[in-house]
Length: 434
Image 1 (cartoon, rainbow, N blue to C red):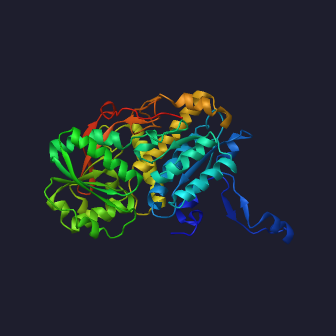
Image 2: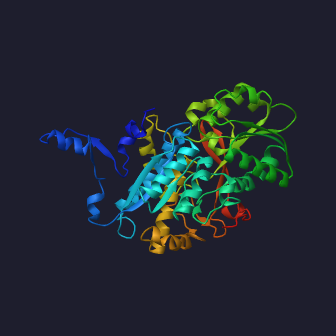
Image 3: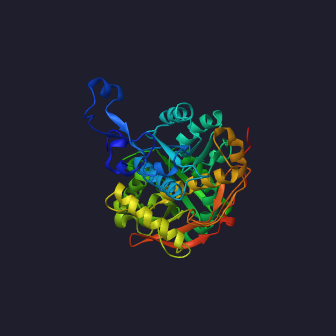
């Protein structure tokens, strides 16, 4: 991993505000070169096409180093892909989008500082991004204080749009209660009634655990025990060795490297043979499958996005998204992973922001109330910009609802078992804006 994300090979094809290139100042005096420094700004390749049009400055916070770097990098691929398409098509309201990228190093305190920098120093018009739920929760008050629309790209913690909701924050994708409403009946009906939940022991994992416990009970099942495992635990044996007893299935709630760890070690300990093996789709994201190999075979999960071209994802819009994402991801990872939900949700989150800017006539931060009003209650149709499908962005809590895919891993690939319509994923709002 490069010491600075800017220096990593994968970052060379990504454009952001202030991107620089090293060069010799031939013909310049020493004092002039010293005054300018050892770098010069490189204009993004689209900049000249917009003339003097003032760019929309959009900040994006992502974990490009640290424990969540693998997911943060693919999330940034989705954001950049959307921005590039928008600018290539003439921008928004005749203005380009200029992306200001900040790496919060997978740390909540760093994330909050970087959010403050985006608001005060960079004076961004809006923000899209996030990834780690504890970081999203730490940054939400900053965006609210500075009256900046915060379009979340990944964070799934339930409280973001319930007890800790903010009028300035929107989540244009699913959350744990919706996933649990969609998957729990399948688990109880098809796999068994008694479940043990193993989960990543931080904000997202805890709220997702609670959502599944509630919905499994409503479906006629029961959660007999839960096991929390700290984020980033390389050897989970001490925790998994305690997963014993009489129950039907093991439900895992993990992502990224932890998803690989639980998948491999649960198999090695015989848990996936002894019990039915299911969980959050993040365990079996396409980027994790090579490291999991045959040990993830038979895993059943739920996700808002799966990288297949089978119905209902056999649309021209999804094929276009899929092919471009594959090409871009290969520059990040030469092994050529397929797109995951982090690419998809950041791509679509930026496009939701675009729709809101268009609809409201948003000029800058002074028009934030108009942008919020335009986004609230927005109905979004499947298209090139939204290849995942239709979605509704609820006014009461700024939470979106969309279809979910229940899948099984067979032969190292995702196979759709059921498609749950967005109308069947709806969970009652529990938000009171300040």
